[in-house]
Length: 302
Image (cartoon, rainbow, N blue to C red):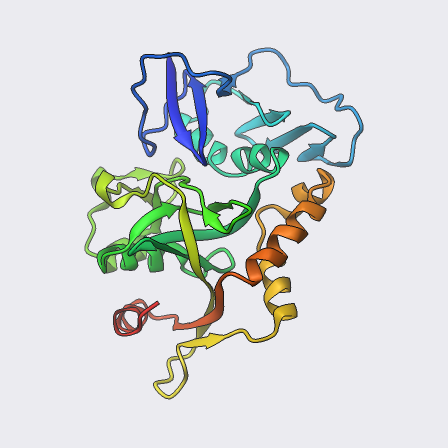
């Protein structure tokens, strides 16, 4: 069965693998040249031409990437048009395939197509977007969920794609929360889908009116800094140095190794430099404790 989705202004046709966290399109007319996501039953091609990078888990050529997820599956991404996956055995949970597919394979395909990707969450309010950037585990999703409760809308989770004019494409509309965050927000996990089999991190369904489906101008970028709680400390501290702002942005592009190996650094450089002239960039200082973090988010306008 084919499932049709629209992400990052592109149509995606997934064959025999549905994504319940995405909104399926019901279009009667034929979509021209959608991106194909499909299972491959023959062995994936390991003889990549023009090899640029290779290790036991990743091979990158001019127009190909092979990504091996140990004990789960292998993905092959080709020419910005095709994602193929082959699981290691029939006992692999489909949710594990979906979770990994919505990460590096989709990111790799977008990088092949020349998209500027930032590892962040993107939210919208009053027609303007913000990005929340931070290392894995810093609490981007917890912050995003709290902002949704404060009237913000979700544009994309984890992978954020920007146009050359500094607008944010509508991307993956999901929030993923660990069990401790669920407990704080008093969310019952029993009816939620875990992002992976036997992992205590869950996909939070977002109601359709709270999901943005069009490109949105970017207003501000916040780099999340987790600090000890200090009432006297500024919550938002602008980054005045253009060099510092550029380096922090460059270091938080999505999968920089893919970008380098696919020779996309030059294009990214120009887009990032252009971005610096258009948006407010600052550090966002938040405490580790969720209750105090929420208190600060409620009392400070982003």
